[in-house]
Image (tube, rainbow, N blue to C red; front, side, top):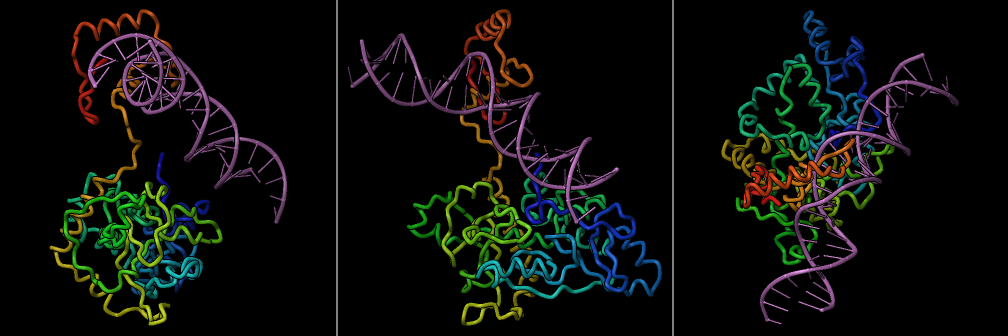
Length: 356
DNA sequence: TTTTCATCTCAGACCACATCGATGA
DNA sequence: TATCATCGATGTGGTCTGAGATGAA
């Protein structure tokens, strides 16, 4: 059972490449007014000097139907005009997301992706074996384009994801005595938080739930869902008070908020540069905190009784259903268990399970 | 543009029975 | 108070099924 991308619109298939028609388009060439996959983009725009001067932008990460017009730092996503308008007009918090106009690039998208990925290979090596990574990647489809084109392993990640490592800043709710009574599971974080880039603006940190709301075609987010985290466990979590929202994924980016609390529309100049000037120590600390948190996170079915699990796995089935044991089978089982009284079945995942 | 059909995806149902936990003797 | 017996409820996993989504004709 796969996990659907949290960002792409269900029901909308990515726009196909105008050239090969088979791969999903990854970039939009303004000069050609063409949607191209990475391979075709590389082929076409490396053909001659003139073509290499064509300005291109990435596709919208949400609808994958139109060229991206803005980059939302809070969502770590490139959005087209329509999606940007829909998403960021949905509620007051979303309106405060800091956004920048998308900068067109001239190099081949493939080479950009390659250089981008190599810069993160070190970090990747530290967080390999992480099948949950994909859950944290805002746009799985977006990433998969690179994976397809570059034959990369899906567990690699990209700079856009870097910000997602930063999702366990101190939670004022958890820290308060009020938070102790919250239904939100409180996970002690023994590692002190890394310096917050914009300490005074904690109230400006927020999460957007792109999974829960099952993005309808109208992109209307229920107001009560604005603070849900990506974690599936958050489905049980009540509404987190506006303005103090922190959960599993809280992006430490801020909108440039004016005194009225509204988005001034002008990017905060220091934010981007500071965000990219993280030291190696900061980065390592963040990766460590991320791994710690990931370890405590579970998307798997909870097994309450290992003994029942062990027994269920040994039981005969007919078309997947439990079946009655025949007398001979019962005798065999009795002999097995009785022949070695006090024997144990080692269950790697759930520890030692006593036999029956 | 609308309708029909085929295909795909996914959540929930189903089964038997050891074990759990409450209750009473 | 401690121990034991009884009984209904619970939980366990692999497969099937039907509803809904999607795409092609």
